[in-house]
Length: 77
Image 1 (cartoon, one colour):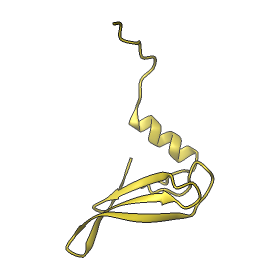
Image 2 (cartoon, rainbow, N blue to C red):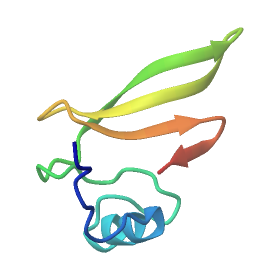
Image 3 (cartoon, rainbow, N blue to C red):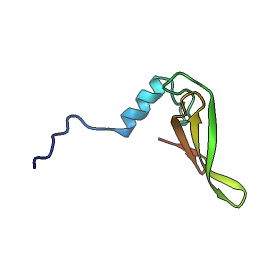
Image 4 (tube, rainbow, N blue to C red):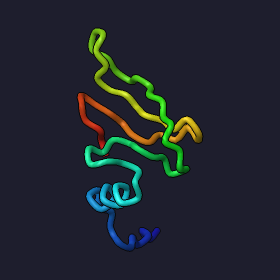
């Protein structure tokens, strides 16, 4: 069985740059707009240490797409 060829390569830096240029994230990688155009979000807490939130996921209210993850004070790419 032959392995399919992969054209091009993925770069997380390029992906972040493109998402910033399109206005989906800001300079801290915080989600500011969903691909559907909505700017309304809700957060789902995924981890806590005692009562402090340590991790959360952010979803679009309109299409329910995951638009960002926050962990220990930082938005993740």
